[in-house]
Amino acid sequence: MKKSLWLICLTLFIVIAGCSGKTEEPTKTAEQSGEAAQQQEAPKELTKVKVVLDWTPNTNHTGLYVARDKGFFKEQGLDVEIVQPGEGGADMMVAAGNAEFGVSYQENITLGRTHNVPIVSLAAIIQHNTSGFASPVDKNIKSPKDFEGKTYGGWGSPNEEAMLQSLMETEKADVKKVNNVSIGSADYFTATKSNIDFAWIYYAWTGVEAELRKEPMNMIYLKDYSSKLDYYTPVLATSEKMIAEKPDLVRAFVKGAAEGYEFAIQKPDEAADILIKAEPDLNADLVKASQKWLSPRYQDDAAAWGVQKRDVWVNYADWMTEHKLLTGTFDPDKAFTNDFLPKQ
Figure (cartoon, helix red, strand yellow):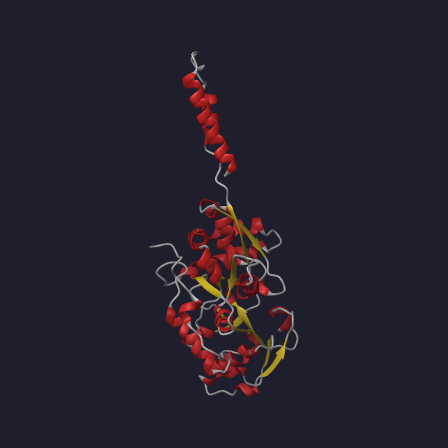
């Protein structure tokens, strides 16, 4: 701002001095005129903001990288830094004001809101839940009933057993007949080659990787057995404070992100190249294949990318309450908003 003001004052001084003098100002060359115009049009200072990922970079995040590297955020006046989460995770960083925006999940926000965590979902990155229980085909697990007598490898969260129970109840199977163990930091491929029969995965990454490895799997999607489990995962989120104090900045960020994801929907191969260039340690073949699988699922059957439905938030909260995973009062209207999405 100071530089711009100084340039304006300098320009006015030159004009006034030229008008009051007795001698005519020398004619400027085209090159000199161009330089003067550039000086008068000082570059707009960008607002620095930080968006923290939920996990290591993957194709859930492609739209953010596209928006940054194709200049969509810059067009909105933003200089966006993409960072990976610290020990507290993305939600805590956003709630504490250590990052303006973050990648979260509906399940996290639903639980957090009942514990006074002031975080709000701004957009659904993927319209439908692409997660489920996967197993190598030789385990012969083709439906939830086949979980009986098998070993599930998870992380020991109450949500996991509740989801197993929900799916198994649809086929009158008994969740108590599942051997539920923790796999710690082991991935699906490592775990299922040892003592694990099936695990919870997101198909867009692990499932596609299995295809590339030529290790066929059976996939049981959560949403196919319960509409209440077709929740938004992942989502873009911010804090209540950001919405209250800097709504224009929030709107600018969401608009840039929307352009990034729309680009990835229309041009998955080019979008994958942008992610690969930004994160060269990623497996390029996996990124390409994952992007091809995921791009049409960002928006899917929604009217536009990012749109969230109140019923989806209510249904999942009801499911959590039914399984004694949610205590306290949950207000869906404070948990999400579509107000910052670009107008269609």
